[in-house]
Image (cartoon, rainbow, N blue to C red; front, side, top):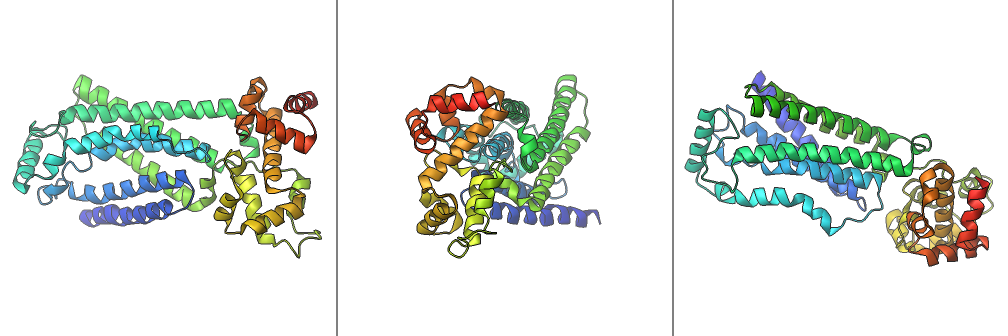
Length: 393
């Protein structure tokens, strides 16, 4: 019975996570979705392989031994990058982010000789570890660093990244302001806060484990089991939350960002243009601008909207022209200025920004394009536009 439950846990849950991960990876245009997909795919592989690393199976399947050690170095990096791209969905993936994966890569490379070694060599290594009664033990024949050092480094990595995640979360609210909780759909904020709390609990047990096992020398496997359970529950929570709230992957939303008058323009109800402007087109365009805030991308082009919505460039241009009386570039700049006004009204920190900083935060490439938008849409210079907003507040 116990064996059956073990098989169900490792293979059924692993397969579900694998399918879930592949589905997320195949989503287009969302970096957070791809990273989450990689995370769940790795978790699925870990669950399946870990079945063969149990005490009853490890000697029968020695070729899986040490295969799950390098992926632990990915727990922290993937977690922080997922949070970054959920909070800032328009952020580009920079090459420097690959530095997060260097420990994983180096640990994998150093154990290639072991992975390619004979079955007999692997069995001897496993028997030595079983005799020592510790997975961190090693004969010293493989790896640049002792496995005990890697165990400490992996634990330290998870602790450091968890602190980093907390700092980034604090910094996000400090810059954006807690008013975002009142105007957003709160789905992503709940995810991040609950996910962070679960990681903090796991980190506390990791710290306790290292203090009792490594420093004091108290032998107990209970803490390791609890850590494993907490991380499993953490990932299970993430999967269920995404299944229930698939819209979360678009990032923080600003429901109410557009005024009622503007939303009425988007609506085909009581609209004389409803025959020439398909309702589905308008809704898709509205969702991208209101929910995903695509206008914050300074390099946004109409072809990008066409690729995301499946609507032709001419139809997008026509829909915006008939509902707003603006060209596509004018509409994008109008959204940026509306966003800027909204942030200046709710977020005191933005009032301290320079014109260049405000332009950048609102999605303009530079001060000149910001000035041009203000002149074109409101007949004011950038300075006059900002002065008017601040006085009205």
